[in-house]
Image (cartoon, rainbow, N blue to C red; front, side):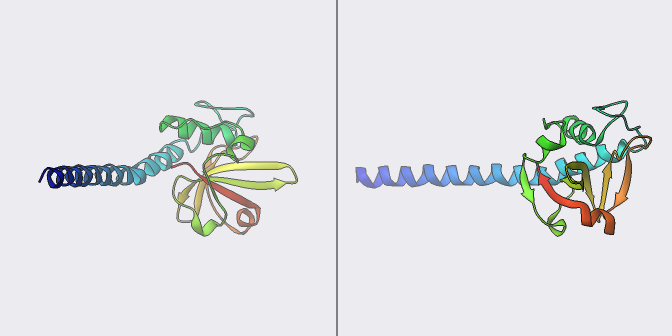
Length: 154
């Protein structure tokens, strides 16, 4: 009789642990789209900010400084150099696998890389180059050819 009580108590404890662990995972999963939406919203809110070499915001940005700043505002610490951004999170190999909030890495020239934030529907926001401002663009033919990878943080 005592062994049966111990077994029942053990099963009950395992059952309770499983129930609560599933609740935590479900609530964490429910937050992910909100976190991605926050990244997208922040990126869009910065459209029009001027480009400046080495700029990490909020007054001006270079491409990697823009990505780093947007993530920082949303509670994520990510590097502020393209080289380091290429190493973090989960690698996304194909444009078709991108989700809102993913970091885009483009290879512009032999050793020159550019970063941006994917906002969905084939669009992204970035701080392009000298004498320009943060802007929204489409993953058109030019950018698709330059796409090297995406990085997923959220």
